[in-house]
Length: 138
Length: 358
Image (cartoon, rainbow over all chains, first blue to last red; front, side, top):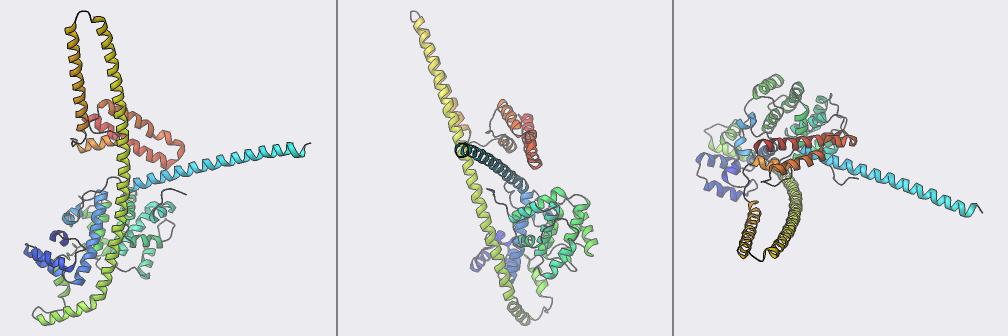
C-alpha cells in the first residue's frame, strides 16, 4: 500500500481543503486520481486512515526491532512505511535495567529497616536497664 | 515502593508464570483487535484457543493493553517472543494467530500485515509461512488488497452496480454514503482518539529522553571542565617550576653566556606557543565528525570521547570490566547477574572491536 499523505506531502491530519489543494498541485496523473478517490470520500478515507495507522505502527515496530529488511516488509509496504531506525536499545533490556534498579532500592530499604529495628531494640533494652537500675532496685 | 513505575503490561509480565505465554497472549489480542469489534464471542474464541497457556493471569487487562495500541508494550512482547520461541513453538504460535485472524473468512487488511510482521519477527520465511497459512486457513495466502488504489474501491463498491448506469450508480453511492456515515464517523473518532493518545505518549517519551540527555551532557561537560581546569593547573605548576629552574640556572651561568640565555628564552617561548596551539587544536577537534560510527559507538560504550588513544581505551576497559564483572553481582540474584553479564559482554565486544581497528 502506498502512503498517499506522504506522496502528496501532507500530514494525515490534513483538512479536506488542504487535501484538495494538494491533489490539485499533484503532477502525477495516476496518483492524483487515486488520491481523489480515496481521500475525498469521508468513509473511504476513514477506512484508509485506520489501515494507515496500523501500517505506521508496524513500521515503527519493525524499525525498533530491526526488521525493516525482512522479506515480507521489503516486498510490500517497505517503501512508504519504513521509518529510520529508532533510538537504539531494546525495550526488554531497558525493562530489565529498571527492574534491577527497583530490586536494589528494595534491598536497600529492607536493610535500612532492619538497621532501624536493631537500633530501636538496642535503645529499648538500654532504657529498660536504666529504668530498672533507677526505680526498681533501691 | 519504587521510584520507577512499571506499565500495566510490565506488571503483568512480572506476575506471569510464563512470560512467553503472556507475550503471545498480548500479540494474539493485538491480532484480535485488528479484526474489528471484540465481542463476547471473540473473547470466548480466544480463551478456547489459548487453553494450554500457562500465564495464570486474567485476560481482560491484556485485552485492554492491546486495544489501547500501546506500542511499547507490543514491542516488549515481540522481543520476549523473539527470544523465547524457536522452531516448532514459533510455528505453533503462528498457527494460533492465523486461526484467530481468519476464523472462516479472509483476514482484514490490517491483519494481513500483522500476520506478516509476526512471521518476520519469528524468522519464518515466506514460503514456509505461506504453507503454514494454507494448511491452517484452508486457502492460499493472497496478497493483501491495496486501498490506496482506485481499482480497489471500484471493485468493492462496483460489485452491485452496472457499468452503464451512471445515475443509478451515483444514487447507490449516495445511499452507501448515508448508510456508512455514522460507521465512518465512529471509525474516524476512534482513529483520532488513538492518534492523540499515541502522540501524547510519544511527546512524553521524547521529553523524558530529552531531559535525560540534557542531564547527561551537562554532567559530561562539568567533568570535562573540571578535567581541563586540573590540567591547566598542572601545566601552570610545571611551567612555574621550569621557570624557577631556569632562573637558578641563569643565576649560575649569568657570567658568560647571554647568548644562550636568549636562546633558551626563545625556545621556551616557542614551546609555549606550540603548547597553546596544541591545546587550541584539542579544544577544536571535538566537534568535527568522527570517522566511523561503529568506532564512535564502541568508544561511547567504554565512555570515551572520539579520538581516544589505545592506552586510554585499555584503561577504560579494565576499569569497566572490573565494575561490571558478573561475579561481583553473584549475591544479588540471578536477574542482576544476567544483566551484568550482558553489560560485560557489550563492553568486551566494544573493546575487541576497538583493538582490532586501532
